Image (cartoon, rainbow over all chains, first blue to last red; front, side, top):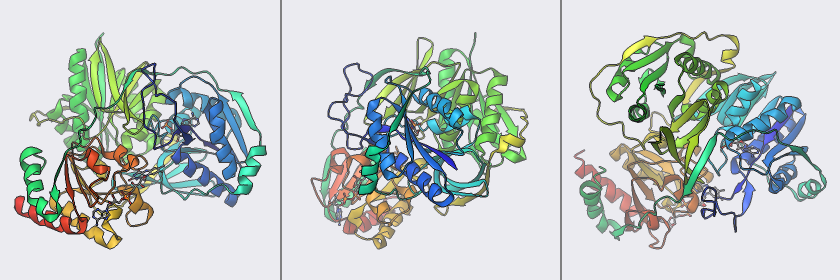
Length: 248
Length: 327
Ligand SMILES: Cc1cc2nc3c(=O)[nH]c(=O)nc-3n(C[C@H](O)[C@H](O)[C@H](O)COP(=O)(O)OP(=O)(O)OC[C@H]3O[C@@H](n4cnc5c(N)ncnc54)[C@H](O)[C@@H]3O)c2cc1C
Ligand SMILES: Nc1ncnc2c1ncn2[C@@H]1O[C@H](COP(=O)(O)O)[C@@H](O)[C@H]1O
């Protein structure tokens, strides 16, 4: 199996977002960037499949030099190769997916793994777009995956249920929490990753289609009131919910 | 040139989802502002009666595609149908709800019809003849205003944010269309659907959520959360700490790496209010917190707080609510 796994490089979940001077993106100063958490599930799944069925895992990231750090993490976990699809501009999901799909057209993977969503712009789009650009099927929000005899079975999380999906290969799978428990890179893995080269290729050009007009902070939520302490406060809370908030 | 908006209404087991009413109503408003028209699209099998209901929310015309092969969702099958109808109706604007189905379908359709998606919008307005969408990014820590520049502009609308309004009592006219579904169109096929919550409400669909965290001390105490949720007709949610500990299933997790919710009322019991948790629920209309630590960060976002032991407060709250609601 030739498996491609896409990893994005995002501000960690602790980040306090400040609007940057252009008024359209975040101020990157002091921000700590990490591998997109969902992409760790994608990498883990790719490695598990390779361990079972053999083959090769290539990690892809589209962006600037900083993304090498994220590729390095994928290598440290155990990916065989890493490719940086170089582009320093801001791209929306459409343009990212175009760049990735163009590269994959010549790589011809049997399976493409992505994360459910990038926790920066929360788009949940790259998987579906890449699949359609390649003319192959996709399964999003996957919490279970089984590949046997060239057939793919997955479970996809929907509201209050799981859909059991059968799909043909090649296929794009978007990983959700619950799919697996990502391994920690071993010391040996980290040392080896330092030596593995990261291939650099200019990303195929593509225009962003979702244009950002401006970024703002959401209205500050005012801290409310402490109704009281312990069970004695319960009647007053219920009164407030009924008469003031009118939500019950 | 007058525009037509196409809005997808979603059915499950032959019933239209509530969030589709919200999406149709908003699509109607935007269509009126643009001086255009609105058509709804429902895909499934023998769903004409349910489709007529959409008239209640402003869709006078509903395109229905009935096909036995479309009873259950199929990414490739539905992508084909929606793309064909977009082309046939010559629409440049497509609305969907940002549900599991809408989020899955939107990017696939975008690629096929030469479109692009503004995902999970929480506000839409018309500015100078064009739609400006507001969407939360960085887990709600910032908002961006965007315009879509593509032949087909696609918007997915976050559930529970837009008002469906009162049903008007008018029936939509149904126009059946057929789309050939064969071979490659069913490269993905749903073979089975297993309920994970035994008929319980999903957090993303609930008006009220009762969530529990590590402050409940043990998985055995979660019956308290469930009972309170029952009294309120609410869904049960959880913090990641209790999901990771195996006390609660993954699909109940609220937060940055869980589900994003915006119910009318969110009750956090024994949850500290870590930034990653707040990211998933701070847009709730009202937040109640019960925590024994008066300095817990959850109180920074709570409208009403009780400082105290959840194991004592929750049973009392259940009793008081049962009385108040006359159950
Ligand atoms: C990459 C990443 C992603 C994450 N994503 C998420 C996410 O999606 N969702 C999420 O929830 N978390 C997420 N987290 C974890 C988050 O940082 C917190 O660890 C987690 O939310 C804590 O859960 P908790 O509030 O239940 O537990 P704790 O932080 O342990 O808080 C327990 C609270 O209960 C109170 N308490 C104790 N006993 C009682 C009692 N008897 N009665 C009342 N109160 C009591 C305590 O005062 C405390 O405030 C993420 C973390 C990382 C690093
Ligand atoms: N710049 C990128 N480079 C590589 N993969 C990406 C990039 N952006 C997004 N992805 C992949 O697509 C998934 C979904 O991202 P998104 O659609 O942006 O929410 C992520 O979890 C990644 O696996």
